[in-house]
Length: 114
Ligand code: H2B
Image (tube, rainbow, N blue to C red; front, side, top):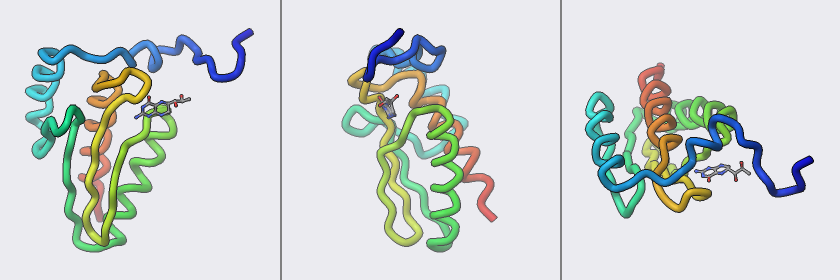
């Protein structure tokens, strides 16, 4: 049995390894269909602007459900209609495939704005 603090070898946990610089670069090219994402301070970075706080918070609520399901959580900052997002994998000490998956899900959530 696993003790406290240990992690299951689930498929998502197996994707947490830190990607190399060239893997991140090609991942970002893959994000070209997701405009606005860039590499900032070693994290995947995007700034969203919505019409108002309700839209921004609705977006964050949709993302929060995905993040909890994936057990992978964004670093983010909200003021009124702006949401600033930085994605990194703390367990891996850098960007992993989980960050690209979450970025993709966040773009989908942003498109669902009312
Ligand atoms: N989110 C992010 N961004 N990176 C992680 O390494 C991480 C996480 N680890 N969410 C998860 C939670 C881990 O702490 C739990 C115990 O699975």
